[in-house]
Image (cartoon, rainbow, N blue to C red; front, side, top):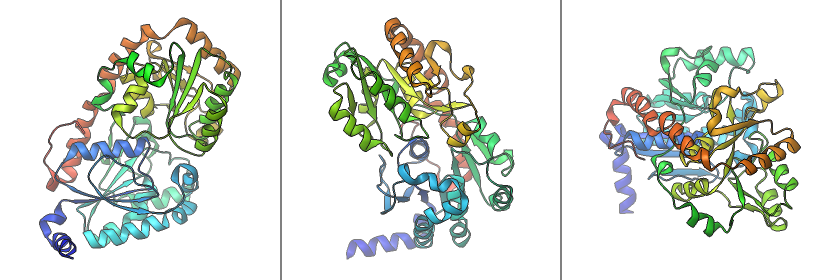
Length: 402
């Protein structure tokens, strides 16, 4: 009882409210959430973060979390690609986040995605909160009416953080250039640390096998089904091991496959950075995905861990794949990885065997050097400066390391 009264008094205290930030996200896993989580962790240690999310809450920070039991975003999130269906899908999240905004009166509401923020706009207006967007998706292919409505509503956004210049260009039609800050993907400092690779490989019991690793969402959009088929094709090769990390629509399928194929192993979802870094470092190659202008977070973390990447030539957005969009060869240097059309499963398997014969050890130094130059936590500095401009009451950086 006493604790409840104390908490209520805190909520009524103006200085407490000035430090409250409400985060609204359909999920608390995956690259878009990690980028948002690390940006906030680096920005200010004294803020009070309140998180509203669908499904299970996963985070490393100290937050007040409100979890809404619901359809898993990694399996059913495709519904939200259409604004009308997205509104229905996110309706419980919209209702709960509006209630939380009224209760906590946050200084800012930060939404993971444009649609999430559009649905949070009434709550921001009621409470006078700044509305900030973290954007990692595709909006330019929406219908004209949707774009027109979004343009009218988006003028209420305080600021937008985009994960690449391509993403910034994608929303140029609805949001002014001055309101968008590009924060290219970065790897946390943990991924640049040295690892006793032999020790980790021994613990994983992979011996001298050529280890192919996939980390990320286990779904069609990230083209996981193609790599899974490659692992089935090479299941009888005793010199190759496939390790899979993540969750999604195929997690139960890959778990069943791992039971009948001894060289296919499913390690589940790994939240611990140190453990994930060790697995990246133990691998010989990491299957990665991205879009025309960037490599997604798992690929960046792999490079920071000194492991070359095996990048899909198709973007990890189904609408772009349907339009025949491909990833340019210039997206990564030749010294740190390969770009391959995973749709050709047999060709992909042959390419992996060729890489195995050549070896990847000589590329490991180049991978880390490239990631250090292009994708270190220094990428956060611009974002932090802009976030402090948007939320001056929350100033108080204690360092970039999350």
